[in-house]
Length: 217
Image 1 (cartoon, helix red, strand yellow):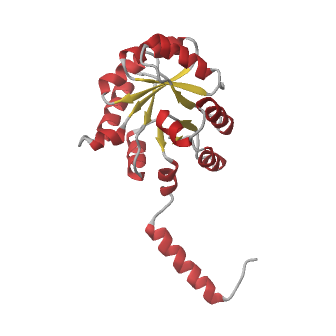
Image 2 (image 1 turned 90 degrees about the vertical axis):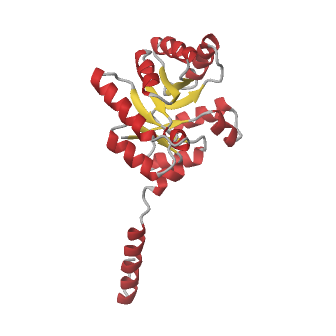
Image 3 (image 1 turned 60 degrees about the vertical axis):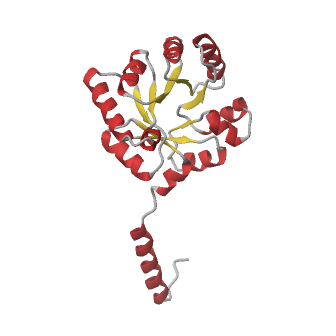
């Protein structure tokens, strides 16, 4: 499974990239707002930190303008994945942009039917939003499983990018189902290293080591 970092915080991206934990990055207008920086400037910097895809989202809602914005974003760096919403106009933009050789991430996917359309339109990635489905008392992982089964049935090459990840459990469940990519905030990825038994064991080892009176350095 590939890890994408869902943030526009370049310091957090750099830390994870140095550990080999950032195979790509996803951004959106909300994350750009949070960064307080110009979209082109911060996206260009992110593209220089990671070698993998960096999703940069259009803000237009009509296909012709989406395509224009997508082309502009794609000029930032070769590893840009243009992010478009899963609307009819978004699918039109996806078809055109992928036809021109650009990576496209079709986002805001909430049904298997939508995911089929994204694959048919040639999307590089489709982003089902797990957490937002959980918020309305639906199981977001059921959607990941449905898309995985359908894509496998027909050999669709579109990668399933599990998004709106809220917890470590979301990451592990998406991995068990077979999502190709998970995009998560830096904090969630760091939490994957935490376990109370690890902390307890380490405390015991350190206490015993102290009793030996020895030093390694």
